[in-house]
Length: 519
Image 1 (cartoon, rainbow, N blue to C red):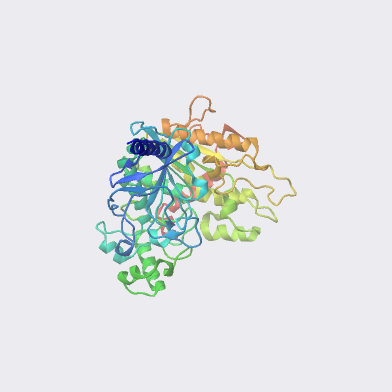
Image 2 (cartoon, rainbow, N blue to C red; image 1 turned 90 degrees about the horizontal axis):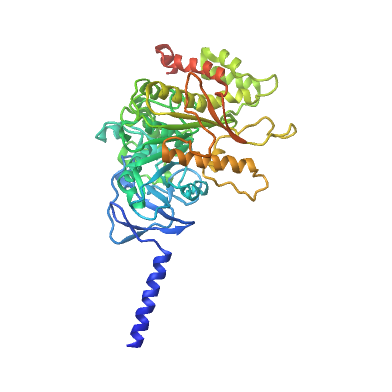
């Protein structure tokens, strides 16, 4: 008897030890998931939110995930979506999974939720990137969710056969439909993780930020989120046959024609044959047909600028901004004559006005000229978003300008450079390395401020809270911007007079004459 008593005591101790090391499984609508304790949080990785989009489900809207028996271990990231190049966790068409970092102690905590959408030009990206790890933000009192979506030609190709088989008679925006399916999962399940399904804020950078903009304009997302943060994004340009950064959108008809060319490039004559090609044998990557969202009349009903003018969007508070030297990543002309030729090719009769507004020097293309690429792709869209929402909506827009960088000496090859595309991500996720000698006290202070502003916004619908520098909502009569630069401070809209010249170009592009020229 003493022997069995000792065994029973050992088993009881063992069970208590395991329960102390491992959280209780959480019940989702499809089954139980087992997370792990990390850094004072409970973390779940690789939870399926839709069925694998493989076989006959390739190039179809995401379908519900299948239920499972027992407890699914959610302790490692799922593969990245299939894409060109190498990715940290491999790549697979079976990619529709999400991850959760939660500080909740019980399912009834109702903690605000931040949902991260990665960037990558709609052609690459993954939730497993170390820079997207959500523990620092979650430790500030939010549930952090990161979601995956199909990218490249697997995420965005359109084709007449695909449109014909669709119940909505459209094709092309599968990656956006994945994002919407993930948000539907959050709405249905996040309460079980201690999150508040009625206090969800979406945020993303680059293509993720453009996605945020598109989700704000989509009728399919009504009620799925209550706030939106866009870091270097926005999609307010009109459609154009030959795309440029900031004018990337095509109509369904144009995209279907590209899909026909894509099928020819793949060497097949039917959709059935195309679906049978192994993913690694498909033509993929930049420069290929497809690979970008389109105005399909369903997910994206129309030119987003026109939708906002008409008040047809999800009217939620937005926190939106861009980096000071985005042009360093998107403007590659080194000689003034090349810059001038590029401006003339893109902007037609507005070229001279824009060259004057964004001038080159005699021998170089300085930041003042690179700012045209910045504003055409990001600055004008963000500024327009704030203006339109202020005019036609009820919810506030908070505008920022990220300009955190050293003052490079004249002898440095980086002299005259600002903050490039993507630099803000490490600051927002608070992943700067304080032991790195190049990390300054002001870097850490700006990162702390951004993490606080972002999580405040998720909690309260405003970045402002006690202890933070006051961030005014955008007001076109007295437009101001939060400068995230050494210390947070409020200033005027950067390059405002130049932005107004660019705005005249986009107004013309939305006219019958400009629309015809764009074709």
